[in-house]
Length: 211
Image (spheres, rainbow, N blue to C red):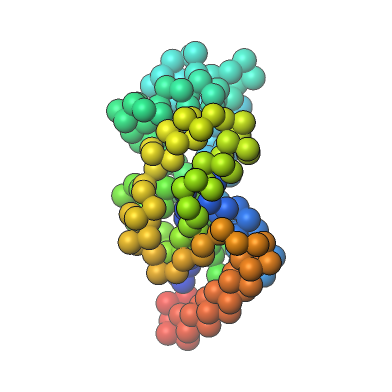
């Protein structure tokens, strides 16, 4: 397992923090986004490389009639059950990492951003990001967003949040933080400011021979 050695940003944050909104702005500004969630969905679609290992580990009941992972059923199985969650992660995350690494090597952009909600949660993601950017927001706002976006109860939203790294754990690893409890325009200005910083760092990395 190799680390991505070129200048890159590891973008992370809890569910409902607004990572996608932030990464979309970075993409508009010219950064190349490698999104672990998008890769994961591809692996668990019909014919995806994750389907057969999941079928063998969990059984046919977790594969839908269309051949895709039954996400709702799997969510019920793994949330609140650390052993089962670890089993699923051990199947998917090495596959996701390999694809993300390859996408980063092939990316065409000012620099690469690895967007990954579990970047600081799992050792498999160590080394993916020269700097860590955390998108943060207060937990009540996080719960509200998850409930609204995914049509979940407060209890379900809190269970998902509890299964991820804590805000404190993410912030302890952060080189940069965007607090996403403000207007879209304010968040955009902060992304633009960081993009300018990252462009300079990426250029310095090129000059030093690291890219």
